[in-house]
Image (cartoon, rainbow, N blue to C red; front, top):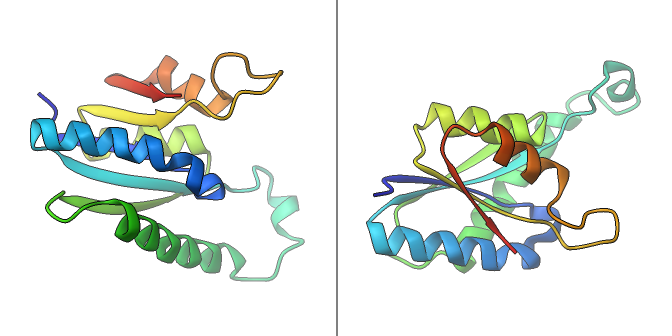
Length: 141
């Protein structure tokens, strides 16, 4: 049923994301799917903000994030689960949707965000992915 599963991980809250990854792994085992484990390095939205940082800082952040993602999956993805790593850069929800289309994902798995008074249902990025995705989205609480 699901051949390619895109699972989005927020490495800023890595330990809170373990359950999300475990859920995606369960689906991958059940359907023999390949996991595409993704995290996104957000951009600044406005070029004027980026001007306050040293040249090359975004590339360094992407490289650091790639290493952190590999370490995270090495610790949590069991042997035998086919997976690849994706580090996006830009708007979080847009990158998730873009990669889902690019890899022809059948399912997106992401977390709802930790509940807080201002986010009673799901966080803003998860909500946008759910609203705009052309495929099924599993939101893990």
